[in-house]
Image (cartoon, rainbow, N blue to C red):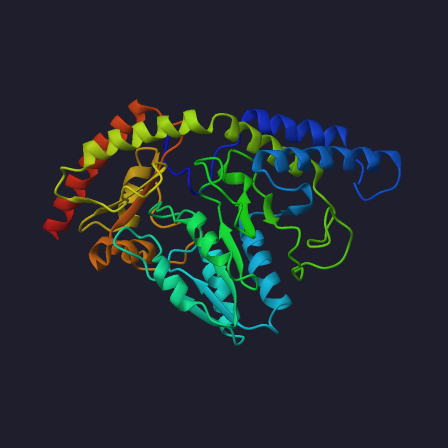
Length: 378
């Protein structure tokens, strides 16, 4: 098997899985219980929370555990909008956001909120002057993902945060699901960030919302004591310990892994760039972990299944996207409808081997020729 869909989900690191199993078996008490077993479970959670706080350079009081990035995004956006609707109902975002952002904003728009989309330049990055021009007296939230999940473009999060520092009544949220554990970042001027364990070789079903301590939001899940007042429910001891372990492991080797993935990305792009049937959509502002290309004239789903026959796995759009006929992210970046209709995403990891890319390339070229011949014969 050749797996090239790491941006959709990652395989679980065996050390993380082992930590989860041990914690689940050894700490059976409900962390909310007052007896010894509950106290022991709570201590383990507190230690894990403290480790995350040190890794991300945030306060342990700012960490909210969720079921994943989708819930974290919803909690941030809805939490701010419900709490501060008396200040205004204007939100600024981009057309490059994950569906858990866009769907939530669509819901709010249907309930009277006004959504503005930032312009992007030819590289797909946010136009900072446009951001300044869109800010209004009733703006309460700006939400911009640090890295787009389809084309991999890195947004100027630090610069956006610096601009918004002058507007204390506007909160800045960033979905960092595709950047945590992959690239270095500065979140000093970001009010809330979201991420998921399943993207950093952790388990599915656990994620985090990091919310600055001085910000109050309305919870979207009510009832029952938990690790914070912002998300009710019995704390999942094993999952919480496992996300702490997963984060520590990816942060330890971040620079080394980045350089390796960068070399893989360059190697594959050099192979693909001279093929007349292929257009490379990702650019110099994209993280090397994501390489988006368009194979002209061949439907993405057709190519996905053709590669699947050879036990090679890539993606069309993000796994959470709707069944759209074209990629909104690719169109926003390239402004080319044909590129957006025929795009596929290849996502790399430090686990990817160069020989796997050689095999992938050879099979891809073979499948392009086969599918082109099939199309011409019809």
